[in-house]
Every structure is written in structure tokens, then in C-alpha cells.
Image 1 (cartoon, each protein chain N blue to C red):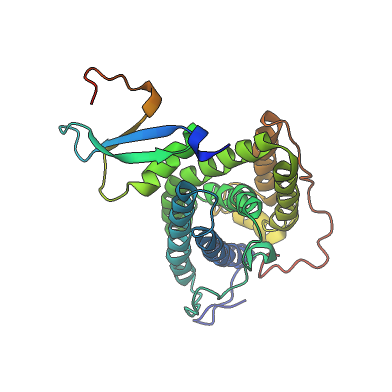
Image 2: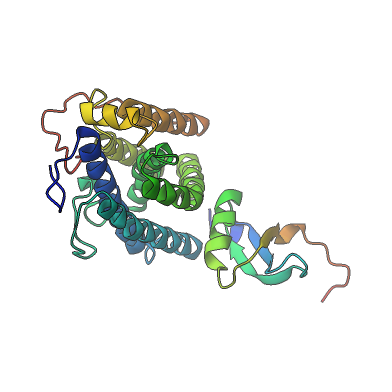
Length: 65
Length: 236
């Protein structure tokens, strides 16, 4: 599988439960479990309390850029 | 065997000293092997994951050596190349399949043993075990995901992984030692660990066989039969 065929994930995280989720980056990985492991390893610059991944293909644009 | 204070040790404690020292040696070697592949992994995401696992393993090694001191054994800090790890992880691994096989088999055996020490009567070991197990969950997810991927790829990738798994198993399955080992049996009866060598091997075999079957594959995971050249102090 070429990298172009793999899933691109948008990564969001927050440092405190009362904070909103912030976009912290992206990663490319076709396996969902590996994506979760990699996201925690790549975006470890803060002691996050919550991190979520969203497949870019699942995002719907209300206003197109 | 005697401690740095000259006192004679019972069979259970001698076995635990061997297991804990070897656990640290092998975690140090695994950390180095993962770290070497942090610059050569197939993708940058995998490279970061390998680097994170290397950091975990080296941290586990560093924090496990002091448990030996609690048992009265002093070991000099001789650096990263010190100790007597399993020979299959004693030098740089030749391919990514070997990294994943080490992740599955060597990490699997060691972590299963650590899980058996979670409620150890040796409190410093129990404390280390609980911390190690928190971090090893991600290593297992990583290993399982790469097993699925390489098996799904089929062909040479799949065949090489199965070969490497069998090679790692032949070495790592000997690490817990013979099923009837008197010192290990005493360690279990004294609550230092909760599972004997055969149970450790059985748990890893059941888990790995299940994962391989799900991926349409199988590997030779037989129990070791010849213990004539097994070195108890280095567990290999």
C-alpha cells in the first residue's frame, strides 16, 4: 500500500477537562490501532488528559476554505 | 549464592535475582534494538513509535536494576552493552520483521512475567511491575497491529515474519526456565510471582496463536525440550 492510499488522521487533544479540544497535528496510518499508538508517541509535547483522532475523510465542511 | 553482605540466600531468592537481573538486561537490549530501528522503520510514524518504545524499555531497565539492590545484590552500572540478554536481541536486528517478532515474543514473554509479579511479596518489584505494565499496553497494540499488517501483505513479508517469530520463540521460551525448576517453584509458593515457567509460556503461546490464527497464519511455538545447556544465571 502506498502512503497516498493510507488514512490521514486529524489529531485533537486537551490538557485539562474544562478546555476545548485543540487541533495538534495529523498522522498517516492505515491501521487504526497503530494510529492511536503513534499519535500518543508523536504528540507527547504536553501531558494531555484527552486525545482523539478523526479520519480526515470523515470531516464535513460547513464552509469550504 | 550470597549477597554483598555475605549472607546465604534461599533458592527462591536466588531465582528471583536471576529473573529480575535478566529482565533488566533484556529490557535494556530491547530498548537498544527498538532505538536502532527508530531511524530505519518503514514509515516516520513507525519510527516515532519505535523511539517511544525504546525510551520505555530503557526506562524499565534503569528502574529495574535497583530492585536487585533491595535483594542485597550490587551490580555495577556498566553501560548499555552490559549484561547477558537473549542472544537473539544481543545485536542489531537484521530486518523490520525481526523487530516485530521481538516486540511480539520477547516483549510478550517478559511482560507476561512482569504481570505475574504485579502483586509480588517483593514490594519494590510489585511497584515496578505496575508501572511497567501501564506502558507495555501500547507495545502490545503495536505488535498486534504489525502482525496483522505483515500477514495481510502475504508473500515474503508474511513468511519472514513467521520465520522470525519461530526464531524468537525458540530463544525467549527458554527465558522463564524449566517447568519443574525448584527455585522457581519456591518463588511461586512464597508469593514472589504468581505463575510458573510453563504458565508464562502457555499464556504467551495462547495469545500469539490466537492473533496468528486471526491473521490466517501459524508459527512453531513448541515448548523447549532440551535444557541441558541452559544457563540459569543468564536464563538462556
